[in-house]
Length: 172
Image (cartoon, rainbow, N blue to C red; front, side):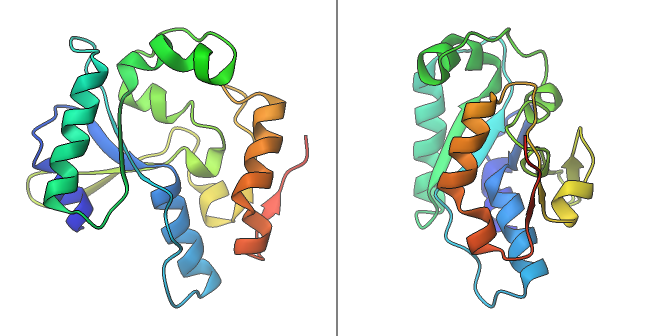
């Protein structure tokens, strides 16, 4: 809740916390872990097609780090992903049209889940592919943007089955 409130305080029109930050919390709870898994980052996604400057992402990340310095924040304007995606992942992608479309393009269906908090602290869920894979601990490639090689690399790097023994990895 502290992280959601911190991001809400930025005053962004369209934002969420998602990906591994949500997946890890759910899978830790389902696996009976006493301590939450360490996060490599807390993915904050927002959508602003007017201001695509990377400096803005960095400024928002700095502000979050000042507010909650113990969290590894990663802030990304999803409206600008098409500007850097090819240099990072090796293939071009079309511009995204909304935050929901962005969340729906994340690498696995269980990871394509995000949360945002409204003014009265109601939590809202963005889950374009549903919640079945998340709650059933299934790792399934989302072909929207994740190549087969990217999926293999992520599965190996994230060590899903090692970290959460109940995970099922759907083969390609």
